[in-house]
Structures are given as structure tokens and as C-alpha cells.
Image (cartoon, rainbow, N blue to C red; front, side, top):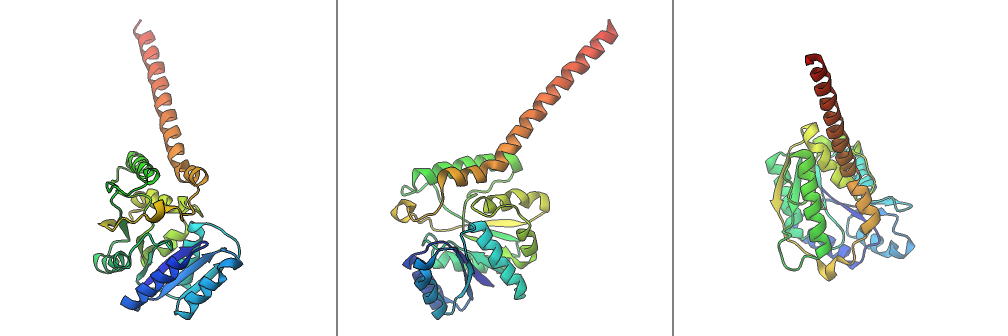
Length: 250
């Protein structure tokens, strides 16, 4: 089992997170520096001194690309159990990260999702609204009730590593695309509740509202357009058949 953390322009929260994990477990940690730039070299060098494996993108490629880089490394190093992906901005507690590890090991599901509670008062409106919309659209498309479609705390079994590499997307849309493909590929999953943390109203997040939302909801839009067109075609064909049979009866 490994802990995989994609990271872009991190602060000391990442170092603190690693230190807390190291105090409680010997699970190896892999951090992917997603093109953060020279100003952040000191943080990543500090992580190396703490026994963390640091992989590096020369330029920023996106969260999805960073996760794929980590998974490729795990495959190359013959990881047999799986990995738990966590964010580097302090939004996930060490306790919850380790709970996902334990759940992945004992439950034998392909994916374990850490589910946040969006009914709490401290949740930023943007996050609460975005999750509600994506949850509804996701159910409309798949019939599956995933309570937090945007969670960044997830466990992945090594059995689906190759499948994960084949999923489209290199940025925030990648994690949503994973969920969209689960049912048709027979991927099993479970959901467990985790603590909901939004420090400083999540201002340290690198999520770009307009660009990343367009990427996330692009497959949703395709699905809706396809559904509407199918409904129109069905209606037109029905009218044509009705007219044809009515003329035959005259």
C-alpha cells in the first residue's frame, strides 16, 4: 500500500501532513511535483529528507496527469495492494487517509471514496452548490448515487491501475471521468464518511472555476445533448410512422 499525493505549488501544510503520517504509520509516501517551479524546490527537498519519494513534472500538467504519473511509478515498482490519493492542501486528515487505506485492504472493493458532509455550516457555497449539481447530473447519467463526486480522497486497488491510466483527462475532470466509467466497466466501489475541512474558505485550492468546470461537465453536456437529440429523433420517427399507418388505413 502506498499514499500518493499530487501537488502543485504547495505550502508548509504538505510538510506537516507528511510528518503526521510518518508519526502514525510506515506506509510509503509518493508526492508528484506537478511543475511547481523553482520557488517550491525547498519544500520538495524537505520531503525527500523525510523519506518521501518525489516525482517531478517539468511543467504543470494537471492533477489527473500527476495521479497517472504516480500510478505508472507504482506499476513499474510492482505495487500489489493499491494506493490512496490525497490532496496536498490540508483538506484531508491523517486519520481519514489511514481509514481509506484500511478500508481498501479489508473491503476488497476496487475504489474507496472518502465522502465529505456538505450539510455542515462551514462549507463554502461554491463547493456545496458544485457538489449538489454534479451529484444530480451524475445520478441522471449513471443511476449511481455517489454522495461526493468531487472528493480528492480516494483509494484505488492495484487491480485497476492499468484501467485508471486509460481514463481520459489530465486535470480535475480526470477524477470525475473515473466515476463516470465505473459502472460500465464493472468497477466496484464503496463510500465512507470523512471529516470535512475547508480552511480559509479553501482559498489555497488551484481549482479554476470556469476552465475546470467546463472540463468536468463536458461529458455531462455531451450526454444531455445526445439524450435530447435521441428524444427528438424518436418523436419525429413516431410521427412519421403514425402518418404512414394513418394513410394506409384511409
